[in-house]
Length: 109
Image 1 (cartoon, helix red, strand yellow):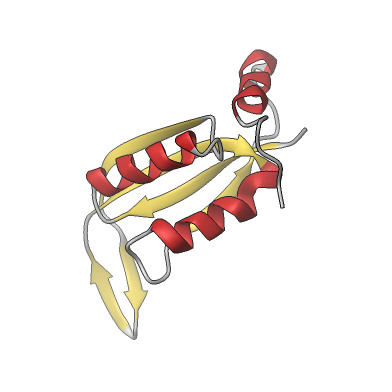
Image 2 (cartoon, helix red, strand yellow):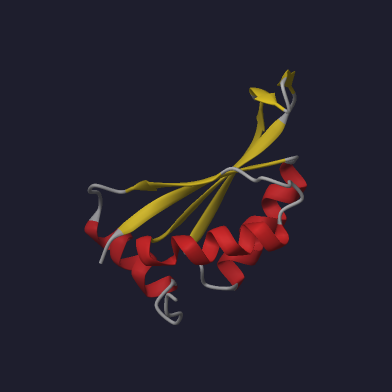
């Protein structure tokens, strides 16, 4: 089984916590970490922007990434939310098995 971390940005810590809870409750992620504050600098609609955001990192199975993308399209406040998957190349086998167990009741697709 393949695992990954899904990096998601949110407008603030409350939104990131809400999204993380929804992902874990839906068994789309075994765990969600919230980093409460960061400063993004980006170009949007032709203008350079600087703002504040929170980061959500969800640990999940690779085969659930598309379901997470769809959930973020539905639940997220942004028109175009940042949702990117980063593969986990290795790590503590017990932790990786735990990710599989916590997301095991859901089938991809």
